[in-house]
Length: 162
Image 1 (cartoon, one colour):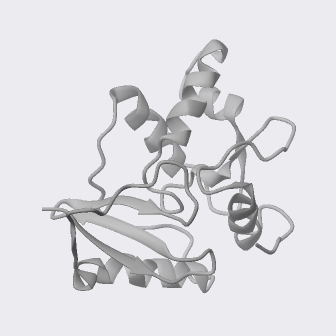
Image 2: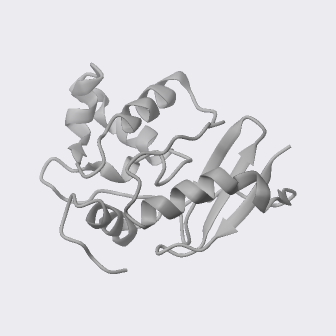
């Protein structure tokens, strides 16, 4: 059975969903294709550890998340999402370099970008750390201003306000 909670954050209200196996999504306001919580039960207690870790992240006390995830995706998406987890806090990587790091041919970079964009765990699985080769901010499901804020918060770029 899937449950959800909603918490306040510097980025607005975050919606988290989970199953008994782990966190299944984290959505932000205005996100493209947010996960629907229709039919789910609100269960704030089920998210105690996730909320604690998110609060620590926003306070600058945490750089990685140690949570169980329960997400489904294709084998290709899962491979890309695992690669996102390896991008260190406070750094960025281009789509091309991310592809090269996992042995993906250059002609598959667009497919990699689509898999990054399909990441259901915004923030905790750091898709915001992937940028254009020229340093430009390219797509983020919750909008470029939130991507810039996250990278500024992590010290990867000059901080911005949203």
